[in-house]
Length: 143
Image (cartoon, rainbow, N blue to C red):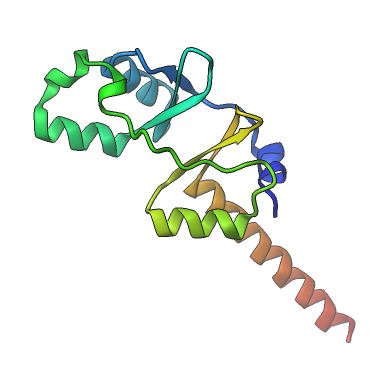
């Protein structure tokens, strides 16, 4: 299954913030939107980072709540792994597993077009397995 197909089913909505946003603003977006990560963009709208709940917790445990007034740019993950719309579900699973990441921004022609989470990947894998099982049942029943 291609990422394009997954996003067509789930939607292309992505919550993004500016690299100049404060950590408090980022935490607000994470909480308000009930999401696990927010994509960080530069002035041109290009992906320049990602900030996850884990990033927030890790940095707050080291430095305390004082980081909330700091810029997201100081705490975001800067080497963002992305994929394109033509990416394949199996490849995405491998990337997420190997790199131990849960969110993968989808970028096409330099523009943020969606995001895929580990939950999205698991959901699609279950759907595919159920379809395959149903096909096998029908095949066996047809004799």
